Length: 85
Image (cartoon, rainbow, N blue to C red):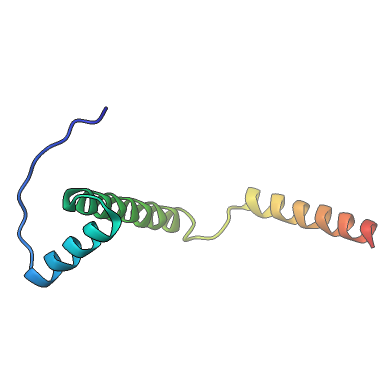
């Protein structure tokens, strides 16, 4: 089971009210709403960073070996599609 940590945060009152209303609507605590929102934000940032790293890796386009494999795969797919026609 995960270890929970208690913390205090400050936010604008209108946002707090929206969180409070959402918690009541979903029948969960405000802490649960904030925890879920934080987890989603962290996951989104992690994905954004991973996407940026992938873009860096592939910024120069495919390497020659990859181009050869792509050409081969396209030929194979073309043959399969022609055979099904």
